[in-house]
Each structure stands twice: as C-alpha cells, then as structure tokens.
Amino acid sequence: MSATLQRVLELSLEYRSPTVARYLWQLDDQTRRLIEATSDATPEALAWQPAAGANTMGMLLAHVAVAETHIASVLIEGRPESDVLHVLGIGPDDDGLPLPSGARPPGSSRARTSPSSTSCCARARASTRGASRAP
Image (cartoon, rainbow, N blue to C red; front, top):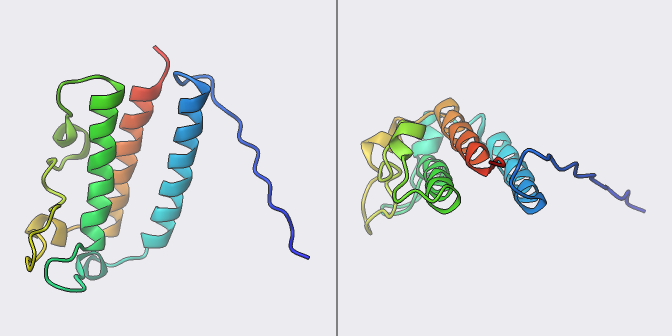
C-alpha cells in the first residue's frame, strides 16, 4: 500500500487575502520545482533549440519571469504599464517570445545561464510578493 502524503498549508496574514496567500504558495511550489529541474542546466542546454522557430529553455524561463512581473505590476498593483526592465534587468521583449517561424533565439537568451535564470525568477517572485501584501 502506498503512503499518503499530506501537506499542511499555513497561510500568512501578510497578504491581501487567504486566497492570495494560497496562490502565492502554489506559485512558490511550482517555481521551486522548476528551479530544481533546471538548476544544473548549462548555458548550452538553456540555449538548445530543438528546431528553428522553437523556444529554448532559457527563453521560457525568462518568459515566466517577465509574465509574472507584468501581471504583478498591471493586474495586482493596477499600474498602467509594468516595470519589467527595472525589476528583472531585462526588457519585456527580451525573452524572445513569440519567436518567428524558422528563427533562431535572440542573442540575449543564448547568453543566459541557469543562475541568471534562477535569479530572474526570484526577482519576479519578490515583486509579486511585494504587490500582494496587504496595504
């Protein structure tokens, strides 16, 4: 018989609502798994493209950070535009998405390393946490 795994979620009172705290917990869990799965990736692995026009892991990791930062700024904080460049150090279009059919990844994504991708995701999450705290 398999063992039952039970997780107890202790919600922080520092966020706007219990629902926001639960979503942040879920985002943290997913990001932890993503970082664990990609932490040993070399720059070559992050830049590998299965076919021209296909996304690389580096592009997708950057896109996750860009999208999260944009959503936190615009949807949670209500800003007219997000400040992706200030928060992440890369612009909103520096993830290279969408990549035109048959294209190679942009130079900025080819230079990404696993630590810089991890750092980018961490800065995005810090921004989301800041935007989600109770006023």
